[in-house]
Amino acid sequence: MVRWILLLLASGLLLLGGLNVFPVPTWAAWELGILAGEFGHLLAPVAILIAAVAGWQCGAERWRKDDTAMTPPPPRERRGSRWWIAFTTLIVAAVAAAFLFKPALQAKGLGRAVAEQMATRFGAATSDEAVFSFAALAGRNPSPVPVETLLAPGELPLDFYRPIEAPAARAVPCVIVVHGGGWDSGDRKQLPMFNHWLARRGYAVAAISYRLAPQHRWPAQREDVLAAIAFLKSRSRDLGIDSGRFVLLGRSAGGQIAQVVAYTARDSAIRGLIAFYAPGDLYFGYVNTHENDMLRSPSLMRQYLGGSPETARAAYDSASAQHQVSREAPPTLLLHGEIDPIVWHRHSVRLDARLGELGVPRAFVSLPWATHVFDYNLHGPGGQLTMFAVERFLKAVTK
View 1 (cartoon, rainbow, N blue to C red):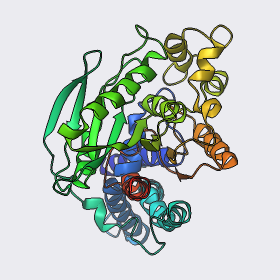
View 2 (cartoon, rainbow, N blue to C red):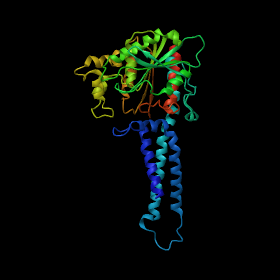
View 3 (cartoon, rainbow, N blue to C red):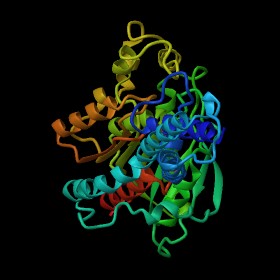
View 4 (tube, rainbow, N blue to C red):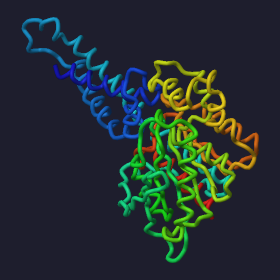
């Protein structure tokens, strides 16, 4: 019985670790990808322990002399069958451990490339800086900073994180965070630890709200972000922020909104754009998905944009950064997981290539193991590379 339990546990860990290699299937919860990718290193020791126990069982069964047995054991208890169960468990657990620890190993190897890219594109890092460390996997989240809720135009609430370590009597840059949620859900409370971390690094953070579909269609969301920027400028003296140094940061659906606002506002106060796993071309996204994907994406886009590309093509074009970006676009940092099952990695690949064609300063952090919301764990493999790239980018574009 114990051998079968160990085999089942090893098999479960193998299936979970496999999500660091293959996208989460449409019938499963996509959050499992976060568990595997950003917390898998915590489960890898369990798989190693199971492998060690199975190895011991395998050796014991292989070499044990059954001198005391006067009669053969029942078929299910024969030594040969027990040996094969232990051997199978050993192999399964070993592979599971490798898969679960894969993101940490890849992050270690990818760190130097990320540092070199940031140094080349923005002069904000050197290749010998520590980007990822195994010790930091056990790091603690930053202490929360006070959060003040304000009402922006349209009675839309805004959470303002005032920086703790900001220089006295000096206006600081402000990062405007646009939440995700498929355009019809989500709110400004998403991933607050990242906002607290930014505030601890000396940046003001404004986590804003916007009107949601289907009650409010595009471009209402763009108008809400522009209104929030104008509101923050009007309150800049009270809030201690520099009205000429804003950076837009958006995740998923919020990344799409942030991209288009940054590329079309023609506002010199928008010093940079950070987009996490964002759909950069909604027409491309519509024609390359299907009605029964993980989020029912075509339905989300129709209710957001007022129809399909055949009936609302102008909305698809105006909501797509791929079609709105120009040579005057602000510096851009893109971050995306290569096995993201919700927003195809190709969105960021294509936008990065377009930015390169136009000569826009940009960097692209592409994570081979990562799924959607890989920045959930600040100290996980994706979280560490994210913090490094974001901090270097902010220093470069807001100095």
